[in-house]
Image (cartoon, rainbow, N blue to C red; front, side):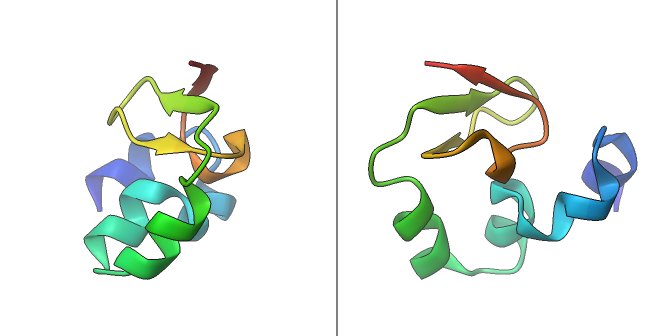
Length: 59
C-alpha cells in the first residue's frame, strides 16, 4: 500500500486514520476524531491524538 510505504511510522500505520478509512472502519474514525486536535500533513485526516496520523500537526 502506498500510504503505508510513505508513512514515517509504518509499524503504527494499521491504526492511522487513512488506514482505518481504507478498511471502512468508519465507527473507529468517528470515535478517534470527535474532538480533533491534530491534522495529517499527508491526507488531511483529523484526529483527537497525533498517534492516529502519519504526519500530524496541531490544528
